[in-house]
Length: 111
Image (tube, rainbow, N blue to C red):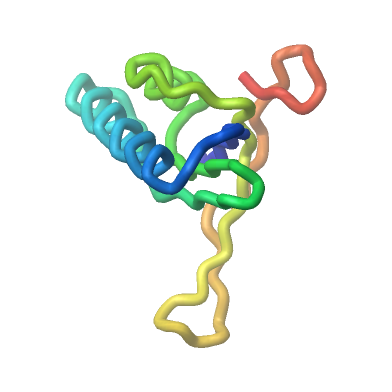
């Protein structure tokens, strides 16, 4: 399953976001080496919102573990659907349409 991990990060900048994404990638590699299925798929930093949105494949528990071992905080983890336009053409493919993560008892927050 694919997830979007949002971090609202006041006073952040592009360099800070880049360093965070390098840590998250390294954390995924470390967990994969230990047999955990988790992949970092990419990220988007929005300077005007001071927000970093990272995309992952794996379980919510694995994504939480990546953040824990890297010391990178997050505000929420959301199931996502991603649309791609391969090769710059207008055809769109859909990846991972499942959205069955379970809430942890607080609205808008996921386990």
